[in-house]
Image (tube, rainbow, N blue to C red):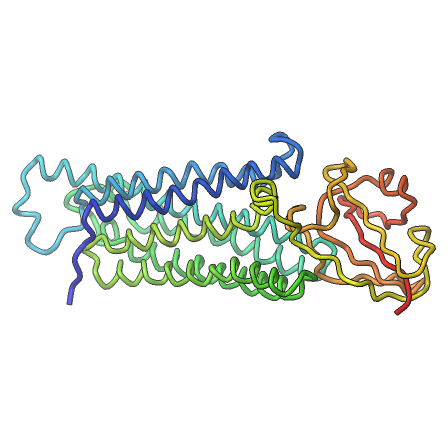
Length: 374
C-alpha cells in the first residue's frame, strides 16, 4: 500500500523545529569553544567546519520546504501527456531544487563526519586507535568522492536532472546514486560508532558521566536508522516525499550528536555546575616520577590551554572533551602517568611547575601524575 506524502505544513513544522534546536546547539558549541580556547581566532578546524555545516544545514531545510511544495520530473505513467507548458516549467524548477536539496544533504552529512573524525583524531593522540581513526577518515574522504562521481555520472547529460521528458530513468529516480550514497554513508557511520563507543567506555570518568557520553554518541544509531529509512521510502514509494521527513531527522540528529559533547563548559557557566571529571584516589607506586612529587599519596595537576597556563581546574571533559583513555608507563621508574587528551601546553610552562614531560612532535598534552602508596 502506497503511503501519502507529508503535507507542506508538516514539513515546515518538523523541519524548522528540529532546525532551531540544531542551530542553537551549533551556536552554543562555538561559544563554548571560545570560552575554552580564549577567543574565536583560536577555534580549531572542526569548529570552522561546523560553522560551514550550519550554512549547509540552513540551505537543506530551505530546499526541503520549497521542494515539498513543487513537483519534479519524476512522473507516474501517463502524466506527461496531461502537462501544460506552465506545469512543465514548474516541474523543471522543482527538479532543480531537488539538486540543491541532495547536494546540501550530501555535503552536510559528510561535513559532520569530518568534524567527528577530526575530534576522534585528537582524542586518540598517542594511542594505537589513532591509526584506525585515520584509516576511517581516508575511507570517508574516498566515499565522498565516490558518491559525487556517482551523482555526476548517473544521469547523462547532466541537464537531464531537470529535463522533461528525462533522457534516462536515473535522471528522475536517482536510484544508482542513492545506492552508492547509502552504502558509504551507513558503513562509515558504523565504523565511527565502532571507534567511539569502546573509546568512551575506556575513558577514566565516573560511571554516570561515562554513560552520558556513550548515550550521546550512541544516538548515532538513530542517525544510521534514519539513513536506512529515507532510502527505504525513496525506493518503495518513489512518487512521494516521505523520504524528506527522514532527511530532516537524519541531518538534525547528526547535528545534535556532533555538538552536544562540546557544550559542557557552557553548561558549567550558565548553571554553575561542577566539572565533568571527578577526582579519584590515586593508586600508584611509591617510586616518585622525576620532580613532580616528593611526597606519598599526593597528586600534581597541570592546567593549560593553547600554550597558556590558566587557573581553571585541570583535566576536565570541557578541555576539548578531555579525559583519560589509556595509561602510559614510564619504564625506568615504573610509575603510571594518566595523560588527559586536552589542551596543549608548552614545555616551558610545564617545567616551571617542576614537572617532567616527554616531548611529542606536534602536541604536548597536560598530564596528571600521582605517586604514593599502592
